[in-house]
Structure formats: C-alpha cells, structure tokens
Length: 407
Image 1 (cartoon, rainbow, N blue to C red):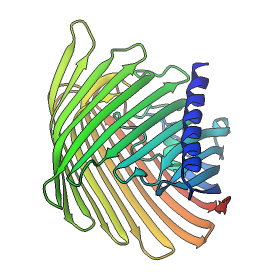
Image 2 (image 1 turned 45 degrees about the horizontal axis):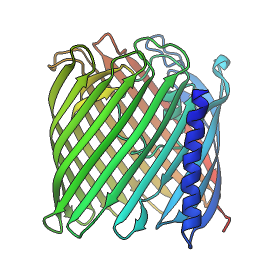
Image 3 (image 1 turned 120 degrees about the horizontal axis):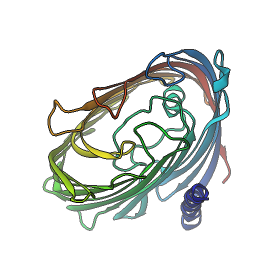
Image 4 (image 1 turned 60 degrees about the vertical axis):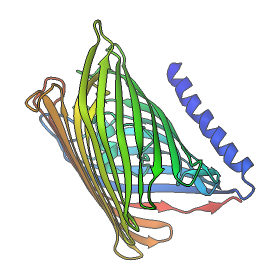
C-alpha cells in the first residue's frame, strides 16, 4: 500500500506540472516521441558477485515514450520506459520486465517571469539489476539534479530488486541585476525487496540556499547553506550541515569556474549525539567550445552514506567530455572516482569506486542511431561494511525514435 501511494504521488505531481504547462502557456506545444532500443551486450559479471564472476551475452529491448510539452521558454519532458532481457547462458536471470522507470524534467529551467525560474524534477525506478541496467542501456537517463545532494555510491554485491523514488525543486529568483537567489529542495526514498547484508532501506531529504552578488560582469560571490537528513530504516538518523562561501567566475565566453569553500558537520541522533566536523570544498570547470563540451569537478566533505546508514568523509571527482565529430557522429567519455573514509584519518577503514564510460553514436537517419558503448565499474574496500566488486560491459545496439506533433 505504501509503495503504491509513493507511485501515485509522483504521477499526480507529474500530471500537475503537465497540466500547468499546457493550460497556462498560450504558445504551448505537445509532441509524442515513442522510442525503441534493440541490442546486445557482453557482461563480465551478470550475477553482480564479489567473487566467482560469470559472464554472459545478453539481448536487450527498451521500449519507451516521451511527452514533450513546450511551454515557459523550455520543454517539459514526461518520460517512461521498460527494459526486457534475454540471457544466452543463464536463462534463470531472464526477466519479462527487468526494469521500469519514469522521469519528469525540463530541458532548461521554466521561465515563470523575467525574474523567476523553476526546475521541478521527479523520478521513479524499479529494477532487478541496477548496476547492469546502468551499464548496459542508459537510454532513460536521470538528470543530475533529480536526486538533489547525492548519497555516496556503494554497489551491492548481489542481484536484488531495488526501487527508488525521488523529486526535487530548484527556484531561481533575481530581484535585481546584481542579486541572484537559488533555493533547492529534494527527497529520495530507496528500498530493497529482500534483506541485503550490511545495507538497509533509507530516505534522504535535502534543502539548500545560495545568494549571489554580482561584483563584476564576470564574478558572482555569496554565502551557501546545505542541509541533508538521512533516515535509514532501523538505523540512526543523521543530519549533515554545510556552510560555505560560493563563487562563480566567467573565465571566458563558454568557460565557467565554480568554487565553494567552508565546513561540513554531521550529527548522529544517538544518546549522547555524535558530532563530526570536516572542511568542505568544491571546484568545477564547465567549458563549451562549440562541438566540444567538457566538465570536471572535485568535492570533499561529510556526506551521508545512504545504503549503509552512516555518515562518511568523502572525496568525489568527475570528468565528462562530449564531442561532435561530424553532423552524424558523436562521442561521450565520462568517469568518476569516489573514496569514503569511515573514520577521522586517511588510514581509517575506507571504500573506493571508479566508474568509466565511453559511448559512440552514429546517426543513420533522423529516426535511427547506432550506439556502441563500453562501461567499467570497480569498487574496492578495506572495511567490513562494503565489499569489492568489478563489472565490465560492452553494448552494441540501435536507438529508434520519431517525434509526432500533436499540436
């Protein structure tokens, strides 16, 4: 019953935003975009096991549908789909429906007025193999801010059914030419259908605010505050606070530097409470040179470890490169490194993960694209709460889609 109410709530909120976009904007447009991905992948670890890895070749099919509503100076996307698989050797893993997902997000923030922008998002996922689903056919991707402040990444060393519900809202308000205010809020619920060693269901709620003052046409500086509450089922609730000085500097047209520095604090609701303080820092560089787009970032501070139900000190670095080689050919390279310390020193128990992805696309026609992708995941640990895991995949398939204008 509770699970059904969560799904109904997401669908209800999605319907509200869709109706708002259609009825409130005189120039609203509506397109339906059916899609189908067909392909196959080689998977080095189909059982997602820490030891005794077994590989297989898997056929996949992903039908989906996107409703694209043009309103408020953007496109509001209502996206859903399912995934089915057929294993060549281990047919006991075959699922008529391996995964299903739902997405609501605007391509750009919704321009409510000249000084007010909104970015609502909602997400629902139900999968029997989240790592395989992520690595094989990431057609229904999740926008980066759907889940708000991300919890630490720990992959479970077994195949298990996972469900995730998430939503967020970002409000950007510019009362004058020099002041910009950004308010953020999000909620996430993650649950497993069966018990998993060392992990538990959890909920995460976040809130944040940043106020920028524009000193020059290139420089914005202001205070930033973040709050995060972790509620693990059957575990200790934890609050994380971050306060920092934030700055944006436009190096050149198409190059934006984002810096934050301050402190992060965690408070575990035990008796007596356990508190921890750590420096907090974030740096990112977003560059756009026509056909080449790059993003690189690094962040250190205290973060909630959702599946383990505890706070950790975390460093995370990310790199994304997107290149249009020709009007028909596109390539993407992305990678991330994350390390989590369970104690106060670098020699404490820790676990790390490395992810990497390379994707090449070739446009056969306006409705067909050939896609080749390779993915790598490696998690290592010297702790008792997270295990080692390695998984590699190579996927080759075709993405079919054709938009239809309704009005």
